[in-house]
Image (cartoon, rainbow, N blue to C red):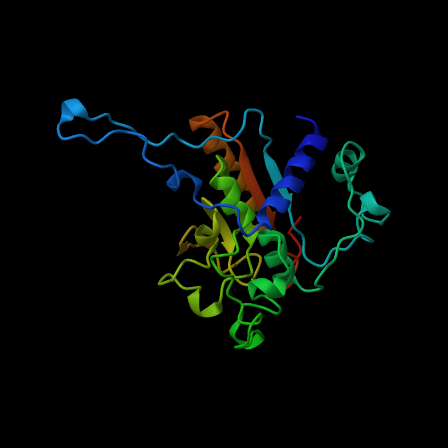
Length: 262
């Protein structure tokens, strides 16, 4: 699949995500097409058809980095050498007129939903001390704002997220939930990473799906990368033709700030 096709597919998905009228939960909206008669002989059984992605639908890997602007990567003339990104850009599209909210949580909320961050309640953060009880500021993305993960999942994709999530309210980020603002409540089949905005890179506040888990002592980037690969491998063994969406967000605001041992 050409990179141009992948980028076009992702662009279309983001446009679809911004449409309020787009129906979510596609697998639950099929009208019953069987017949219920007075007896079994007069009846006709029917099961809803499993929703599948279109033939040839591309896999999508979405990488989101904190504190990295256009001036950093070599792809846009920066000093950091990014040969893989350069190759993708040469064979695809580059967007150079992107509006940024300048802080992490609103940017995440806007990209995930395809909407202005204030319209999905994320003008600031989802943290107790950095949110406010006013419209647009409470840090709770409403269920009416479908995420790209929800839309792709309900149209035949598997959806995975690893790394920093950053838009779960602090008071909901325990093993007691509620979980509707966790990644698994926003369309991701699996999540492995941290819910806050920063964490220790060797002793992270680590979560998998809907429970906190113990880190293995390695650098967090290695852990989330291996987990992403395992999610994809496991899916491909069960359904090789099913496309996936991977949201890879390692984050750069871990605290304390630590480089890898090597």
